[in-house]
Length: 46
Image (cartoon, rainbow, N blue to C red; front, side, top):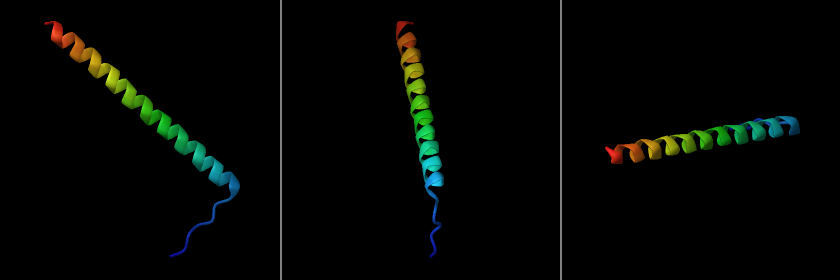
């Protein structure tokens, strides 16, 4: 099986893209967590 050799610029580009995707995913998880807390918090009052 042959592997593709990436240039240094391609490696940096891929790394920064992966970091951006990871941060976006973490942000979504945090958003869903906060929304869930708010919904359950309001649900207990009724």
